[in-house]
Length: 395
Image (cartoon, rainbow, N blue to C red):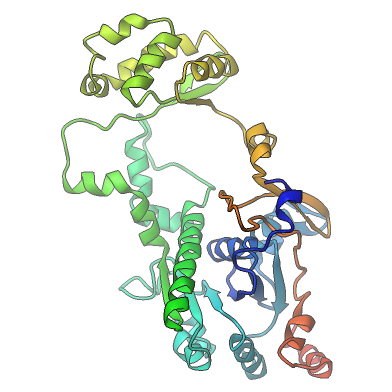
């Protein structure tokens, strides 16, 4: 949505206060979505800061990667091993609705900030723990980042079986487990907030990135239990004269539209393609014949012709082209945010709400920038803040 139509709207989570102990990606992804819906998110960082602050792309010392994940959040930087800081954190907890953390299981307990300790202070607290394997089970304490979870979940080997001719799992820099885990955490927090409205009680959410990835493999988990003889039809890129296009004629109507678009109406009576079962059995042949047509055209022309006939398709695009996509612009899919090095685009949540503002907030905090204001809000005076900074416990 355009900014002028949404800026005056209230956020669905206005008034919700979140204490955010997360770093890197899965946790920050979840808490940024909370901020996008209007929650006050207070990011609690180490004195060195979230490591993503140092990751490229950087401009004048500011990471756009960090800004994307943390727009709309406040920042305090502190030493959680300090008893004085832990006491202040507990004061903050008493004022908060949600706490999110993605340390390895047991770390928050060592700080004295585990769910049991904090629920005693604030029984309405919703406490969300995000970890690779979950808080329980034989692998709970194993370290895990998204690529490790991709391997452990079966995702990489499933994908390898879909790649004809490949001899090893694909290399990837796209952290699906982080984004998926963060999205599930965001949804679970909403459900817990709703339940709290009815019961008055908070609860602990134990989010496993491994289980999020396994849950994404909907067909594959069933096929593993009940293997069949026929290979599942796969969607393969088709070559064009200047690139590739994805064509997905999945329904009977789509197939008829495809036959018309490529100038082969006789395909509809071809025994190889007459029924849905026939087409599935000869799927590779159908795509190969379609590719003969696409190779005679550039990707843009092929997409235009197929789309005009109603065939589901899309040419393969680079991400810089996606950033300027008219469809995404019309939907207000990106927000402009600013940090100390200037403005840049970040994706908004992929949904609109008719009665709520849903978009990234234009604020990227410097490390520890909001400590004074946040602590003043719970009655910590300026002299006490200065003393904590002088002791090295507060950034």
